[in-house]
Every structure is written in structure tokens, then in C-alpha cells.
Length: 77
Length: 244
Image (cartoon, rainbow over all chains, first blue to last red; front, side):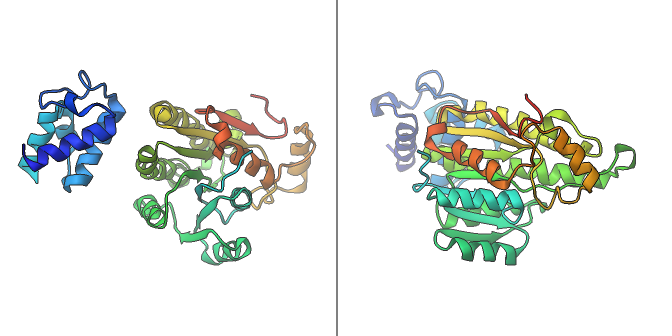
């Protein structure tokens, strides 16, 4: 597992208060991990801070799963 | 009750009568303060009187990036747990004579700047799962007032914004409320002539103008942990002149 993936998962676990085992790459933030709209905004902000990337609104809308987040950060950092 | 010693509060417009009273009251409850306004010497004097636990930041919120900068500077020294959006201006004029500039200046400072400063403060509050935003509105936002189309619109706008933010942020331990003063004895109302004052007093059941401390007490309450279940509310403090 890459470093980026680990760090993304750690942020998800911390912010959503879910068990690490549930944070699979194909897990949807909203459907599988119980995030509400505010949670998703907070996650995006946390990713931006952790990785020093800027995630524009149109890109943020497409980040629906853990893998989406990892892919975006890999491509943009 | 109403112990604020673990809290840090930012008060805008602390150079005005109501803002100064709010700053003093929060400080008296133990809160640390960030006081802001346009006049440095007035802020410095207030800070010197209050003594410890006070940071002064000079800011003119009419400038578009001022809110962001102000919040950044305030948060560099510590968290902002309580944000009191008190700064406001008037450009009173009958609508027929009101220039676009009179309209937009009041909307900009009294409404848009409040939004920008609140947005800037939310990030930290969300992270900490706690926050208090207290917007100082006005009775005229609910009743209207001749000569104040701009001011009344901005203050009514604050009420709607307060409710929207309260709905968005309730799940994060952040409350957003409004305190709507009636006529308070400050420089802003000292512009009234004797006749206007007398006619005004006739409409106030309490029989007096309000004092800054009357407003400050409402702010202290809403800032406290005891008010955790009050959000999206407008608390009218007007001596009964408008019961709404």
C-alpha cells in the first residue's frame, strides 16, 4: 500500500470515526462510511491540508470513494 | 453559569458603543479577546483598560480580503471560539435620495463582510466541534424604518443568513444566533434630535433607551455553554418597543 493511500485512509478514519477495516478503497464516503455533506467538505479540506493540494469544487464533487481521493491526490501532488 | 474562561472571542466593531460593551462583558466572564475595528487608538485604550487576555487587530472590513486576513491574524495567536459580528455602519437617507453607493456600502459592511468573516472562522470551529457565531442585527431588520432601506435590508439579511448557517452547522456543535438591539444609547443614536428622542421613548415600554450592557448580556448568554441548544434564533433586546 502506498504512503498516500495510508495517509488518506488515516484521515478518513479520524474524520468519520469509522473502523479502519471498513475503509476499503472502493468504499463510498456517503453510502458505506456514513458521511453527510458537511463531512465530505471537511474531508476535502483535510486532504488539501495534509497533501498541500488544491481540490477545486468540480473535482471535489467527483471524489466519492476512498480510491477517488487517492487517485486525485496521486495525480495532483 | 456563563463562565467563558476557556474561550477566546473575536469582537468586530469594538470601537463602537455596543461593541465595547460586548468586549467588556465577555472579558468579565473570563474570555480571552481579539478586538478589532478601524481606529487603533480607541482599541489600544480599551485593551489597556482590560489588561490581560486581549489581542488588538486593526481592520477595515469594507476591504474585500480584510475578513480572511483578520481571521488569520486572530487564529495565529489562538483559536476563535466565539465570533461576534458587531461592526456596522449607517448611511441613512430616504430611498428616493439614496445613491447606489450608500446602498452597497451598507450591504457590504453589514452583511457581506459578516458572511466572509463567518466563513473564515468556520473551518477552525468545525475542527474543534465547537463554536459560537453571534450576529448583531437590529430591530429595524424586523420592523423597517424610514430612511434606512439599506440598513434594514442588511440586518434582515443577517437573520436569514443566521438561520441558514445554523442549519448547516448544528451537527458540529456550532450555534449561530442573532441579537437584535432596539434603540441603544450610543454615538449612532445620539445623532437624533430631542424631538425624535422623545417620540422614540414614547414607543418603548421600558421607558428608556437601551445600554450597551443590555446587549452585551444577551451576547454573553449566547456565547456560553449554557446556550448550546439555542441556534438560528434572533434574540430581541429592545425594551419592548417591538414584541416579535
